[in-house]
Picture 1 (cartoon, rainbow, N blue to C red):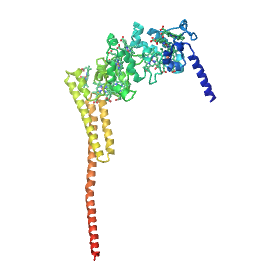
Picture 2: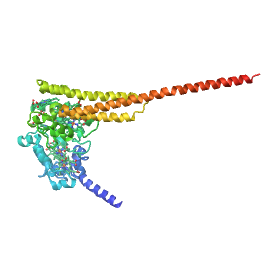
Picture 3: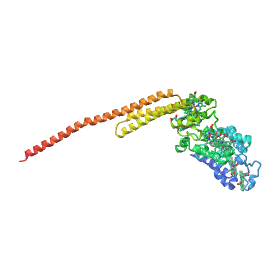
Picture 4: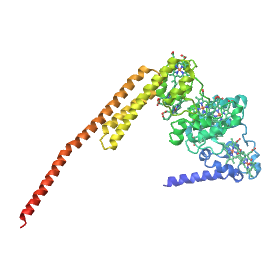
Length: 397
Ligand code: HEC
Ligand code: HEC
Ligand code: HEC
Ligand code: HEC
Ligand code: HEC
Ligand code: HEC
Ligand code: HEC
Ligand code: HEC
Ligand code: HEC
């Protein structure tokens, strides 16, 4: 208890000394942003970045030799890295110290350090200046759900992007994508935002050679299958942009069998063999999907009518698994490998339908078997009633 009180006292004492510096008297606006920041929480003050005289109560506070106001992006990167590139300083916090080195390999960093281009992003454009929060804080500018806005400040700026001949619709494309739907509507942070695909500090567009690796980091199975497909060789030779050729990059939508109609023809319009293959594969997938959804309806109807369909529900799960497997396996573009899965799916559907038919037969039988029993009981009741009446009438004088 005493220890806690002491610790609190010490903490208040350091906080007071930090709050005592004269800078805060004139710079309330900056301080309001700064106070909740990760830097303030770690005990850093204005002096750590700006220098100056913390005792002076007039503008001579700025008159010291060490006073600085970094206004060039290179100087800012170097200021941040003076601590964040220093292993000894960052060790207690367990933070990596490679941000500047990585940044220099990004298009942003290359442009800044080689061309002195002041329009690219530097540390403060992504993290903020005085309001830098821990990256895990949901309010941080670099928190996944804030990333599109952070990048969008420039990459959604049509005039700026035209200057660099870069697309101006990346942000809107991304926001319409299935990935964004997962992140923003479903709260699934395992789906990618800009920096998951591009890297944060080493931001470069994944070149043709690396695109598959980016998607394949998460879509491991699809990547493995693609590697065995007829396009793998063309991709290795740089003639085919792996996943992006069929799915796009920023505006990726939920995939469905309709994609076959849209994609193959873009490159194989004059290859009847390839288009035939496309139709065969799409046909197999449709057959399995339709079979499965028909079985789902039949089992559902049976359940509604009060039949006990627990076993059939299990079969349905199995049928759905086959369809899911098929939707991934089509990445092989090999009909002979898909056929066994479709066959198995067909069998499960057949079995399910037969099971439901059996259930219905039993139900009908139960109904019919009960009819004579009811009739017999009714007859007995009538006879009993008649007998009683007869007896009563016999007793009357
Ligand atoms: C007497 C009031 C006062 C005190 C004390 C004071 N400042 Fe300032 N400061 C100003 C004014 C006024 C400006 C110019 C307007 C502006 O940029 O906000 C300024 C500007 C600045 C700038 C921007 C300089 C530029 O070239 O754009 C920085 C950085 C700064 N102050 C930091 C500090 C720090 C650090 C301290 C404490 C060591 C401090 N100030 C103390 C009033 C003060
Ligand atoms: C982690 C480093 C860091 C700390 C700590 C810091 N600043 Fe700054 N400050 C900067 C950088 C970098 C800029 C330049 C921002 C820019 O060019 O947009 C800046 C800019 C300023 C400016 C110029 C006006 C502006 O907003 O661009 C003022 C005034 C200022 N700081 C005051 C303060 C005061 C007061 C504190 C303490 C409460 C403080 N700073 C703490 C890094 C820091
Ligand atoms: C293009 C945007 C961008 C730029 C520029 C940028 N960062 Fe980051 N930074 C991020 C994102 C996003 C994260 C969140 C973690 C991640 O995705 O790596 C991050 C994380 C961090 C972290 C937390 C530890 C870590 O490495 O994950 C530190 C510290 C950091 N950045 C410092 C810097 C410094 C210093 C610079 C300038 C040399 C800088 N950042 C430039 C986007 C950026
Ligand atoms: C004087 C040393 C120093 C300077 C200069 C400095 N930082 Fe920091 N930074 C720290 C310390 C210490 C922490 C606190 C780490 C903690 O509490 O986990 C920190 C935390 C951070 C974090 C949060 C990391 C996390 O844990 O999520 C980011 C992001 C960050 N700094 C970015 C910057 C940027 C951008 C600049 C330049 C404008 C900068 N820093 C300048 C020392 C510094
Ligand atoms: C301060 C403005 C600004 C911000 C913020 C910004 N960028 Fe950039 N970015 C640029 C500019 C300007 C270029 C053009 C550099 C060039 O191509 O010469 C660029 C280039 C790029 C490129 C390389 C494009 C190419 O092929 O040349 C990628 C990738 C990129 N940015 C991703 C991002 C991501 C991801 C974010 C957010 C985490 C982000 N940027 C935030 C200004 C910004
Ligand atoms: C699912 C992964 C993914 C996501 C998420 C993503 N990108 Fe990209 N981005 C790519 C790929 C792949 C390319 C390269 C396209 C190609 O090779 O055809 C690219 C290209 C770019 C380029 C260069 C465009 C060009 O034509 O040169 C910029 C700039 C860019 N992305 C910015 C962003 C921004 C900003 C966001 C967030 C709103 C974002 N990206 C989200 C994968 C992604
Ligand atoms: C950071 C991980 C990650 C990266 C990187 C990533 N994705 Fe995704 N992707 C997801 C998640 C999570 C989902 C939603 C869950 C699901 O359906 O698998 C998803 C969904 C999809 C879907 C829709 C799936 C469906 O059910 O119809 C497609 C298509 C897709 N991604 C393609 C790509 C492509 C192409 C790339 C590379 C340009 C890529 N993804 C990069 C995680 C990622
Ligand atoms: C972005 C262009 C592009 C798209 C889209 C595309 N392909 Fe290809 N495909 C190629 C290239 C390039 C090759 C390798 C050169 C060649 O054999 O024509 C290839 C090769 C093939 C081969 C091997 C041909 C052989 O003789 O070895 C098959 C099979 C094939 N594609 C089927 C398809 C199907 C089916 C689709 C749609 C699901 C499709 N492709 C979509 C560009 C594409
Ligand atoms: C030749 C065109 C083509 C290429 C190349 C391609 N896909 Fe697909 N992908 C499709 C089609 C068509 C579907 C829809 C299948 C269905 O649902 O009927 C699909 C479905 C998907 C799905 C959802 C179904 C599932 O498997 O869960 C994901 C995720 C996916 N693709 C990821 C990728 C990734 C990652 C790559 C790169 C390694 C890639 N795709 C390469 C055409 C392609």
